[in-house]
Image (cartoon, rainbow, N blue to C red; front, side, top):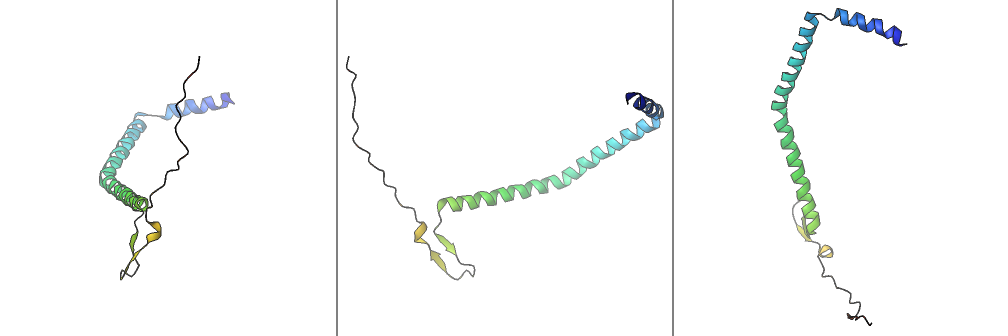
Length: 105
């Protein structure tokens, strides 16, 4: 199998001339600068969009974590206070008295 591939590689290497190498370098150069130009145009917009979305997600998480009991109805006419979600103080369970032990020799 390798013996059949070797002549094809040699033939391809023989057809690679100076003009093909220059053409390849120019294509790489053009693609690089086109990507660089487009990145300068669109990357700030993309970053701005991502930051806005992250900020909105963070704000939503903060509102959910605070257990905000005030919210507006969809028609914005009235405000409803939800007292079921109000924070309640937690009672700590008392397990018992603390006993200090001493080692006996």
